[in-house]
Length: 234
Ligand code: ZN
Image (cartoon, rainbow, N blue to C red):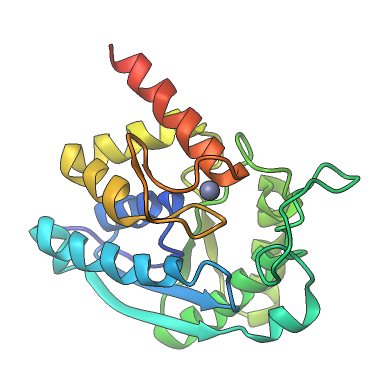
């Protein structure tokens, strides 16, 4: 019998799918939250539903722990950002070395909104797939950022929240291995077939590492991690 309840920030990508499996293995009741901010990859929002359906179908022990999915409309982010995620522009690196897909500080907002939902639903553990090892330079993915925010949110809501980031110190090869450890080949197959990472929303081509354009920064990380994981297996 697992105890505790958690709310997982779930985008339908490889990282948050692995985090969701991690939460389902560690907590007795798990809910999910996603944010619709006019992503160019609306396909990612479809991937969320397909991943949830596949997890319920494949893992009986997780099915009973997996509760409600909360979808939050964050169209306002489209008004305050000018990035490749929300406009039809090329993905390039800016002067700070950050891809222009960056919506400044978006993870801060995501965690605050998740905490507000968690407060009402009695879910005081928030789980996110942020990672400092292979991250694309996003300062809001850093461990220190999230630890500081955990303190601020807990103080500001008068309720102790714990932010769990099981991928924080893993590289992308480790993340594939974690999926395998949690759910074996069946979970790896769900990540490969159903999760979506590509910034361009490409689903036409199935590579060994899943679907995507193969060239954007997100695909490049996913591909390199998968190939490194495969090499470690042999
Ligand atoms: Zn791509």
